[in-house]
Length: 125
Image (cartoon, rainbow, N blue to C red):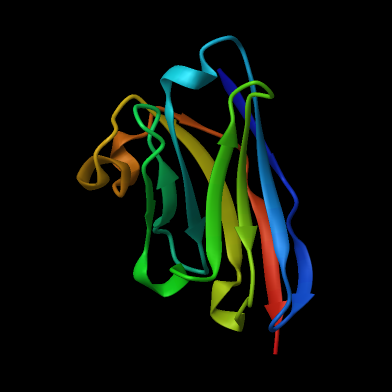
């Protein structure tokens, strides 16, 4: 599986963006998928994930109620709908694939085996 993220851009605070992550290959449905973001520092921080097992969804506290993760296995695509964006959401966003399914695993970047290239999200105040 190879991953290609898209949908980033420049938006004003309070606006919305929808990120997509297209997966090539036939095994998309057997991977849990996640979104991470990286600001000016080196660390990629967990944003959201969706389990392959039962489509359970997980979010970091700062995006709960504003972001929605979803997946379309028929289209091999992962989405992140981001509403009410804030300047602190500014980062490069990465999609990733993991063979695990629990929150404790999916919230850790070391549990992901495949990564897409990032897409820049910039939120102006």
